[in-house]
Image (cartoon, rainbow, N blue to C red):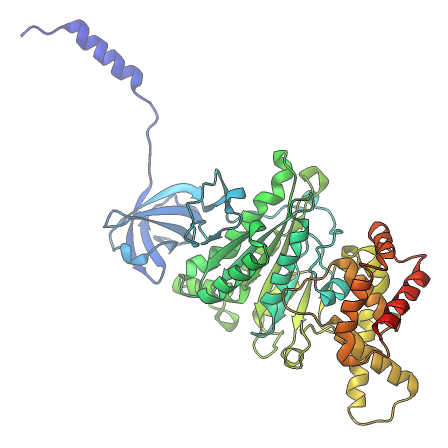
Length: 515
């Protein structure tokens, strides 16, 4: 048999040319123990903290895991998939990557799990970009002071505990005191800005909530047309602890994409992230830590539970103009037990945030809703996050209400009050009535200013308590019809200065018509 040497040579030449000198070296390990969302892995000597690992299950499925503990001979990893698919002896491959989730416009209006997979039965999410779940927060030089208001549409909040874009405001209280409702009001109120340069993208992260509760939240947002600009990230109560632990970070990463739009040459958007709630995230993290044999500390939480929340909330910021000027506002929710704000997790989060809205069960039961305790609630940004008109009318409101509460407690003893104290008591009672508000009925900020102006100037002093709500409705309708010119002036000036007498006269005129 004659061999054609030229053919052989050409084949060898081709093989040499197509040969790549780069060898693919993969670090491979083995599962030695698995259970409760945790795997112990032997090998992987070059694995880094937080690195993504791929575990090849016996049935051919790949389960994603993340390295959390680097020990002398094994690695403790948390599983982002079904632990039942993994067996002892399965091979593990390191990826050299950190955990990432899909980000972008495609997520708006969707309900997803912490890994960005749809939970709403809709089509697959075609996101072209991904964002790192855990990043280092922007430094001081990349930020600017918080000075733009983020309107909640809730009179008690916007007047006395104002929140600015880029702020971290804690919502704290016992269960069933209306914490989620206040945050949903804030999300629904952003509808007025959608489609404008001031648009706010909202991210609602549900950690450890019942699936029925999350479904109720989604229905509410759909009903009020707020789902168009909202992403719902859900890690329900039945979800594995590792997914509950990463859910707030995943939601934050999805929001940050919009905040950094300015760097991509697009219009930077403002973002509002609601973490509902971080107490349950801390419990999930405690579960992981104890399973990974990390030493327990106070209330059995690991020592780095403060870092767990601080590295999340520090990502809320108002970016400098050089970085596009976008912002991310965080509303973490913390549940207290029997009003104990001095417990471990509440004190941690209070010290990380820029103020807190404290909701009190006694006020809630007394029918004062939102049940905000004005004495303990505070905003450390304050007047910087208010429009001029609101600053003018709400300046003394907090002190007046605090004084009214003291006087009310004193009057309960049946003491005879002098006329001045009686007047203060009457006005305080009407202001409390005025600040009451129905659920999911956000008020325009200028309407809030008009209501509080009328209350603080004594227009309501002789209106029967039961009629305060009706009078307020009549007053606001009056300024949309007969007094429209005056309201338009307020819209352009954003201040009452120089026209207080006109406003006082108009309020009296509206009151005369009400009678």
